[in-house]
Image 1 (cartoon, helix red, strand yellow):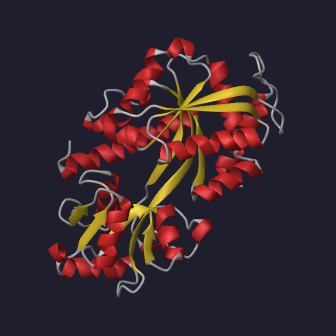
Image 2 (cartoon, rainbow, N blue to C red):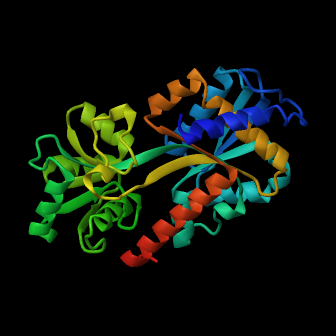
Length: 328
């Protein structure tokens, strides 16, 4: 069993000691809370929305929570929802806010004035690794082939992504190139407004490789449109074990776009632990497995201080790279 499994089980066991507030009972398939309200910092249909609603669905369907409600609050790159949670901390005990890697990136760039340090960290729950892909009929069969092509004519070799320069797809490509002992500031990155446009650029030959989320890469690979050159996971992902990692190709490029939950600042530790136990119990249920598989994500459960250490390490990694790229 992996360490995340042990951590989840430890949290579930701890749930029996956190029964002091209304609506909670022990774990093991019994209701742990009457209701959870999810605050979503973006509009309907996005990754945050899908994660929050999928989590609520699994909690209710598994019987761990009686009812889940949802509130979309767009604006300011997520800053509006974060500010709302902070300003209404006294009345937000029943609220969990979903977020992901952009809270780290946008805090670094100053797009939002808050950071994860201004909130109560509950747990990271799922993640989407990143991947570099080429068209299915590309002559590039491996990352070694792609690097050879790049080294032969650096500015003729273009990597695209569904985000602007300095965005996540660009940063992932830079992480990979840096790990391959190439200058992360020198390769030709072409940013598109969205993943669909970036995929069109790959199919048309405008770009040679595409930087994208692993779940999206798997969907495209299963449709026969792309070949996955490498994944930023430490080991092959069972959901699509045909995709090689960069690590096994001698390139130590690891990155995960995590998704997780935060609460208002100042929340009592007893309630923090109750939320963590609830999410840990959920992740052991078949109802959650159905939701997770549908979203194409991987479990990366990290509660509390483990979550904080992970975020601090990601902040350091991304911050160092953005400074090297000239974006900070």
